[in-house]
Image (cartoon, rainbow, N blue to C red):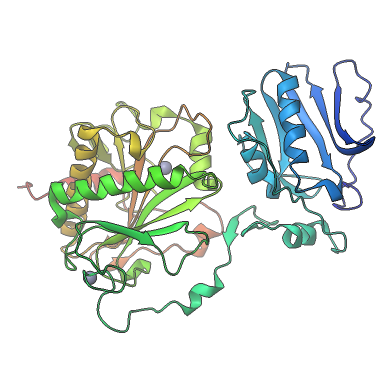
Length: 439
Ligand SMILES: [Zn+2]
Ligand SMILES: [Zn+2]
């Protein structure tokens, strides 16, 4: 299969098959081998699973899942695997977690993954085993693109993950009549305080995209919601995170907001969105891999007095030391909380108060509504432990001075290096001075 189906002529004859610590597993029916895998014991005591292969006519029958579950049981400890990128979601369903950055092996994108050895929470029925099997493709890259039945694509050049959402081209730029989010409108027929619903024009299918309405007041801002109104939004975020995170096919819940036409918000009514991903998206995963709780701790770099913007009991907001955007903000609780649903009553109040406070400062900064992008990073909901996950909010406002937008330009997109025209210490001072209580 590796050679014929995947153009993967790697050195299988590595001389390790007959080592006493190497174990071979296969699953047979009526004397015929349906699936095979190899467990290698490393010098460091690390067990590696490799060469997982299922006969073509036995795929999609749960065979692969049974074999992998048995291999994990035999290994009796953590098991590592370098999984082909398009099979990573399948391995996640078998209890593996992505542990590192995407890399190439034999011209195919892979993720390093790890199983902690405990029995899988998910019964390995594996009815979706569909490895890259394009026998007629002209190249490994073409095979990857064409054989994957994932809804998203992985760029073989960059490793970037992307969805093709051509149907969103038909999305109306502006509703033809009236605001669809006002009570009585298309999406919100009944009166409400806060309200969420499945996006009619989803970027990802299968009910993975939701819209969250912050208030029935069309002209409100986040700041004008006040503490009670903002708290209702926080509660709804937490409830939707819990509901979507509980789905078997959801591994990560991203809560976010695009505010203002400058960032493509086509409807002015205060609202945000939620994407429920199957995998933890690269940006969130990169942060979790660094797993540096010190980034949010009381004495974190950038959280000190110089760049601190405001404190509301258990939550703080500050300008990051290496901010890439002029008035970029990071909001986090002072002690570790993994996700929105885990926030207690006080924590929710304090998050609401901090959001009201900083969005108010942003609007006062240049005496105009500040366009911004806001997103919340939290613990993945893939069934694994994430001991380092620390709930936090990113806000990237767009203006660098009154009426002047900061654009992401070629030098930055081409290098992945940011050039920020406003010193973070200065930005924090400006934001402190912009508060309603400032002299
Ligand atoms: Zn409205
Ligand atoms: Zn983050």
